[in-house]
Each structure stands twice: as C-alpha cells, then as structure tokens.
Amino acid sequence: MSVGTNFLNIVRGSLAIVRHSAVIVRHSAVIVRHSAVIVRCSAVIVRCSLAIAGHSAVNVHRFLVTVTSYGTDVSYYGAT
Image 1 (cartoon, one colour):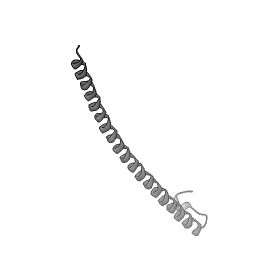
Image 2 (cartoon, rainbow, N blue to C red):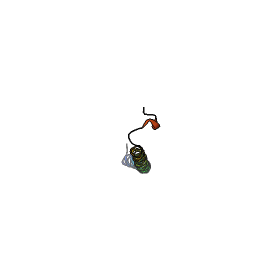
Image 3 (cartoon, rainbow, N blue to C red):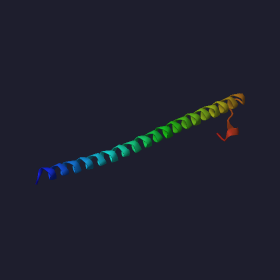
Image 4 (cartoon, one colour):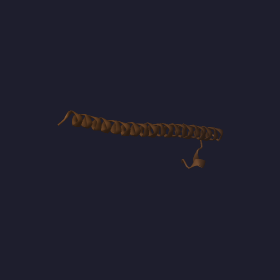
C-alpha cells in the first residue's frame, strides 16, 4: 500500500466515525426528549394521585361528620 492509499483509508475511517457519532448524538437527543416526557407524565400522575387522596379525605370527613351527627347508628349506611 502506498502512503496515499493509507491516508485515504484513514480519512474514510474518520468520516465513518464522525457519521456514527452524529447518529449517537441524535439518538441521545431523542432519549433526552422522551425522558422529559416521562418526567412530565409522572408529575401529572403524582398530582392526580394527590387530588384523589384529597377527595377521599374529604369524603371520609363528610361521612364521619354525618355519622356523628346521627349518633353511632350507622345502619343507614348498610353497616349493620
């Protein structure tokens, strides 16, 4: 092999590395975007769970207030 052929092989190899590196960077960017979407969805799930817990607490409180206002007889609620 001549010096020129070796040089061309090195250039071709370097260009292949650059192309592959660009693909890796693009894929990494996609992964970062998807991770951001997952974080946002997780935040929505947490907020919804907290809202459900809050409504449940309100319902339990209303039930207890109603039960105590009628005394200890909870047969009205089917708990005989």
